[in-house]
Length: 184
Image (cartoon, rainbow, N blue to C red; front, top):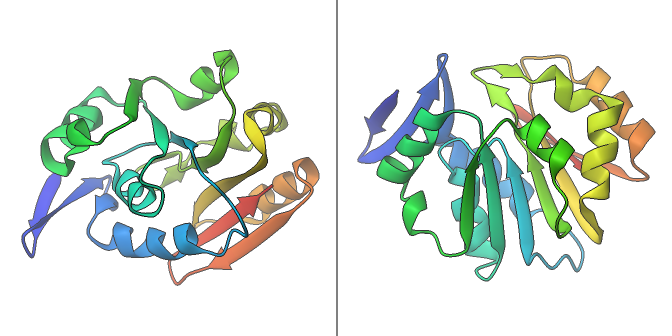
């Protein structure tokens, strides 16, 4: 459901704001986080939602090519109608299950991968499997980074342990509502 607040749209799924509204503020800090000399020319977003993250990435890396994967056809329609994703240059939206898409993808590597695989307030457990983590690691460029979004209403210890097992470096950014994990 799309709600308008203070002249801006916000996408709500399962009583959780997924895009727009406060989500933009939540994502600003991790996307501005000092990533060293990170250059992003190719970005993958797993769990596109309404595309708030797309707008923030484009503001920081205007020439970046972005591939956004979203499982829900209705969310894709809403993202185009209310959040202007149909007007974003170099954005390719794919309506597919992100886990299956990653499994079969054989293309260029990505400088940044965003893993935001929530349906309502539930993170997709398959995205914490060693098999999935190894596969997305192979999709990452040598100097790239993967950013995992974790809602703090859930215990993140299991995900942190899995990431520490599968990646050489793991950094954390704690916000009042979310924990962002930077794997590289």
